[in-house]
Amino acid sequence: MPNHTPLFKRLGLVNHPRFVAKPPAQPGTTIITSHNPATGQTLAGVRADTRASYARTLDTAERAFRSWRSVPAPVRGQLIRALGDAFRAHKADLGMLVSLEVGKIIAEGQGEIQEIVDIADFAVGLSRQLPGHVFPSERAGHRIIEQWLPLGPIGVISAFNFPAAVWAWNATLAAVCGNPIIWKPSLLAPLTALACNAIATRVAADHGHPDIFQLLLGTDEEIAKPLVADKRLPLISATGSTRMGRAVGQAVAARLGRSLLELGGNNAVILAPDADLKLAIPSIVFGAVGTAGQRCTTTRRLIVHEKLANKVCTSLVNAYAQVMTKIGDPTRPGTLVGPLINAHAVASFEHAVAAARAQGGTILAGGARVKRPSLKGGHYVQPTIIRAPATNKLPIAQEETFAPILYIFTYKTTQQAIDIQNSVPVGLSSAMFTESYRTAEAFLNNDGSGSDCGIANINCGTSGAEIGGAFGGEKETGGGRESGSDSWKIYMRRQTSTLNFSGSIQLAQGITFQ
Image (tube, rainbow, N blue to C red; front, top):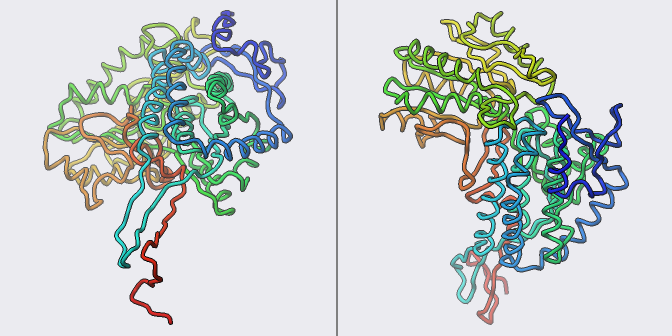
């Protein structure tokens, strides 16, 4: 068994009071055990929170809010600048930890930590320009201003597939806006959460605000449900399945709180007859097999003009043949596809493949587990291509299977392609490859008749969003927006104020009241 102790030491985990180097063999609720999905071996464990530690954490966050909100925003930005620098320094080690714990290849593991660095840079800039507005008043000697104020402690619930970046998207912006963060990460990635939060806490303590980054690890019953229902948290940001999002949204709405929901995705790429396949094929392959198909932005459906269908299928099968030779240990250079997160994910993959076969789909590539002696114990599957029958009817493709399965459909007209793209219940990311301005404009039509997703790309794939733009989707994806643009507004409350410097009382709308 590889010795990961040096890595854990460099990340400050070994001496952390919650770190358990050798968790007990029998699973329990007091220690959360982390497993390497590439080998099935135990990495380490983290002591879980209890109702008592939950209560202490919420009290601490409330106290931290009262002091942190009074710190000028540009000064808050200096703390976030130091946070970004700390993650720069630990990028290689944290990236390796992500690879070990959730199975991302090295490039993707380090890319996730780079997202933390990038969003920190964005937040630092934001700290100098949190805007307000001045509006003209109809009353002489009056001025109307709008300002944005800190909201309160923010609850963040993240999923295993981005065990660090999604927390940072929320944490950096929320902190710059004057709010502490309480993070409830996935139980499948407790070590990444512990390491990231420990770094953030050290940086915050160095700046005199040790309590603005809080971590809660535990079961849904012990931690998640109380967190979602807690009135002291004006906003819950939750990333996960649509099923989970419905439960979170309903619970938060019942107490009239705010929800920021980033839920499922069933993303499609449309290939127009004039598509540049030198651009399209690599983008489709990365979008479909990157992170072993476990991104919310994974390309799951390919909608190809009937004139291109056979050629595109042949090109993709050839490309997948190359990818198949590079499935393996995600921590090794040269690996392109790592494992699924656990045995349940493998079972879901097999169920989807079997359903597609039963529904008339044709397996063009993959379709099975990877069975190599060198990969024994890991949760590996073959990246899979399934062509829909001539009727284009394939009900399983309506579902999001968190695995590397790409379904291929054909179309005749651009509107038919857009209709197929929009036919699923979720609406996160979408893409079209075309050299035609008119075709692209039909896809991006500003009357709303084009893509119904929160992200719509031309000549680039569905996966790999940058932090500068708002990230999120429509329909059952939840409607939330994180990261760039004006996503910061969700972490603040708006206040409109009228200032009367006229020396007299004047009423609006010309009303007189003597």
